[in-house]
Length: 189
Image 1 (cartoon, one colour):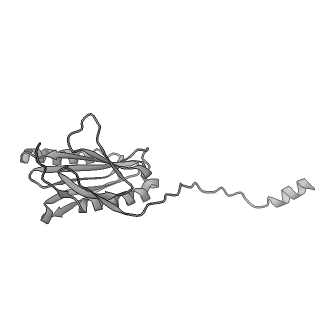
Image 2 (image 1 turned 120 degrees about the vertical axis):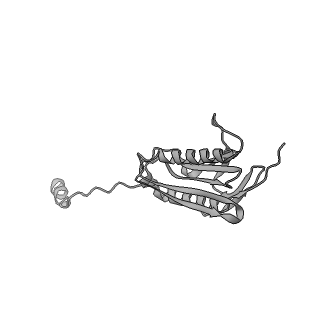
Image 3 (image 1 turned 90 degrees about the vertical axis):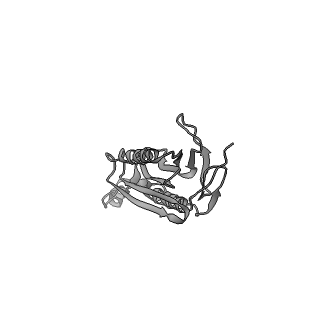
């Protein structure tokens, strides 16, 4: 009787469940101001923390903006521009670092950022591709004396298709940071 009921109850085809991904709860967008003795200021999200860059190549005013809940960080470097040749070199270095992603990228879109009232000019690079190590990079300059560069990286093996909701969320935060970015004069010690 048990065997008959087991055979009768299994009269439909087995359909496996599709592979799922973890649910990502995105926090509310609230910003605070980064305003220290650094030569720049901007707003960044409350769920991120700013730490000093401790890499062996670090220079003054280099920081990392760490997005702890997302295992991501924005590497943020600052350079003093001494002359036009230095600026050209920094611009070329930024372009070269973006172009290193070409083998893994499907597309690299760039757009200008211009805020003449605050003397902030730059380029923003949106790097598309499921295996690209960095999905978003930018540089900002006053075109005379100051230059910053930022690059977003995840501390995970890149699978940007499944990370897309987080990437889009963090891009909005970085766009806000760029829009609120201001240069400051730093007093020499």
